[in-house]
Image (cartoon, rainbow, N blue to C red; front, top):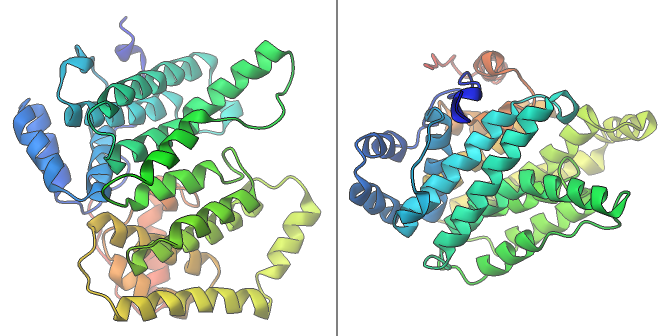
Length: 349
């Protein structure tokens, strides 16, 4: 049995495959035809966030298979291969909690994530100004950093003090020099610094404010909505101190907190009204989805309504998969739409 055939093929494509990104079916067609020139041209034609999103969706669409000589391709194709391999690492891991994952699945995940990193480092020699490359590198580091941390702990005979990640530091430094800002690179960085991954709430919010302070559009305020959601998710799903979880839940109904949410929502719409809608597709759907999930979970249906309306069918697997099983996502979104007076959407898988 080959390495790839030993990995489950079940997790091929969560939700609607392209999440509304028209570049995804084009890219898959070019990939399947091995039209590397056409795929490179498509890659270069897209904003950085849109090509990052395209690569991630390709990874979910494509079943595992051996990619011969990945280092022989042009740099743009290497980034695509690395991104696909990164998603395959997630498929190898599976979607359970860490303690539920079998050892052999962790080993496959580690191997694939390491391969993705090595291919990215090779592509970086020619694409050091491409923020899509660093977005994939940061997403991949969610997995690799954990493996390196575990190896350090084993080598040092105990839990290391502090979390050191030179790859993240390098990627963040390089983003400062890139020719184009990328909301998904910021997303990956904030997630890395969240308590669910390798940081804590203070680090997460500091990183969030760092990115939104340089925002090129109002859609980047979706990163702040995302941070609020990640905090909510942490206390609801992971906080082991029952008293802290209780205090957080009680805080959600206080006027100061509700005021913060209203202030963020108002800032978003005010900035939106003063700018053109000419922003990358991935920026728009990021804001639509994170504002929608945050406001619905906080029972702020009135505020949620225009976000749900704009989101429409462009539902993204993340963040909705954090709260609902895959086959329950569309149904729950339609429940929220009904509560706000919006019509039911007939979603197609």
